[in-house]
Length: 121
Image (cartoon, rainbow, N blue to C red; front, side):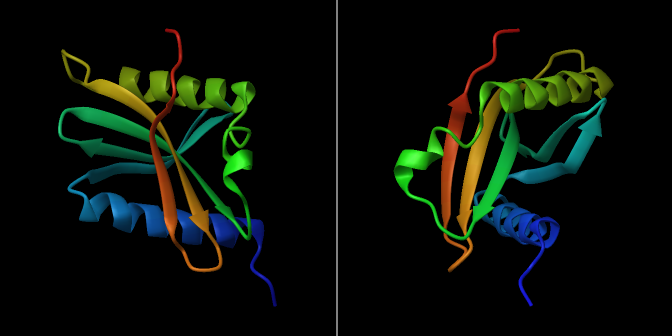
């Protein structure tokens, strides 16, 4: 029986969490939601908070990657980011990075794009 989209997404997130931890990051939150906005993973790597969107696809080629996170999705991630930052009790906010992690469902290999997009605040 094929995996549902939700379980596929969860598997992809688990793979990316392991990747981030292996690279020295701590995971602050998963599936952070706020007013219709969501971000899959929030990770702290050194002095930077990474807001990571995870896509697990059965197949994709590199020409499709740039279209995977459209402007509307970017703004939803940014809205979740703003809400998360507002919840912190820090006096100085960390640097922020909006990243995208593509997980190939056939072998769970990762293509991680650090600073995949920027948002004007």
